[in-house]
Image (cartoon, rainbow, N blue to C red):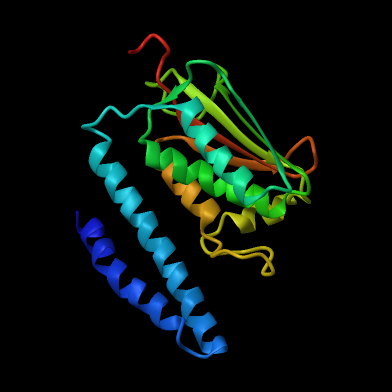
Length: 218
């Protein structure tokens, strides 16, 4: 509750800073804007975590995977007309997550993939293998959600660096560097897992293991 209250109290001052940055000279304005956007990202991250923690024990969340992912991919296609987005979702797949948390995690991965992709981004969501290890043994149903691009990819040491909060590997690309760490934090709040590796096309392969809803549950 205290974390949520603090984050809410900071939202308006940060919005004021962002607004004021537009009337400063460019060098000072860019500096203030960059720092305020980083603060805004952190505030939103802690709001997400506070909300998930508050709801986790009392709310049975459910989000149908196909329509949620189709909406996200449709938006990305409009914003990145030069990149082909492919989506494959197993029929009837549902996640035990709030829709906004699913959109936050996958949206960040899609934005990252589109930023570095040369021609194509591939998204898939399927039931995870039954032998997924290292996760809550009380939950037997998990979903594997993969976002993969054909960009330059990352080496193992770069992957470790990319997961650090606020770290950007390519300063020429826009963004605050918070995307992957936010994805990791939200996934962890749902007792899931994020792993990064080099995919088949040579680019980055982001794999989320997220809690699912069994298909026989209404």
